[in-house]
Image 1: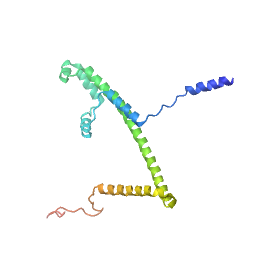
Image 2: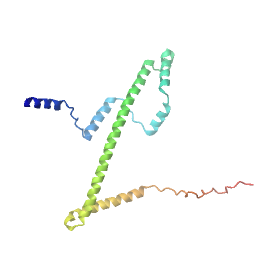
Image 3: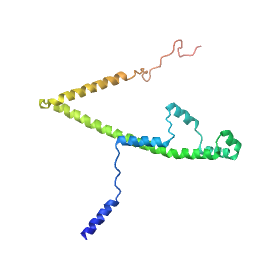
Length: 193
């Protein structure tokens, strides 16, 4: 009976879904590049190109469907457009199906970006703790080995602060609330009599 219970437990454990092994970042990049090569039509656009194209496609789905029906209603329209109605319907269907891929990739990118942000935050916390602890321990002559490390971090931090302030663009001072804005030359702000 004891062997029977062990066999039942082993089968039950084997039936449980095992977590998929996680991929290293380099493996994910390789999978994405392979997938991108298999997609075929990938068209990177600049922000300006994307904005221009989005401005041109403000046509609703019912209007698209009705316009495709116009193509199918008369061969002369299909000839003038240069596309048969079935081909345009296929393009419409394909565009809708690729929207699901877009959403999935956007969600994946958001998840990967969020996870990496959490990693960076954890890393910043751990290194800040290490610096704080190292600074305190470096005060003791017995821990003199830490002094050059702590001094290097101080130097790098002061360099980073200087670089940020030097890169910050100067913004013009706006008048304080309640003060009148400066007037242009030759105008007094009062109507002429």
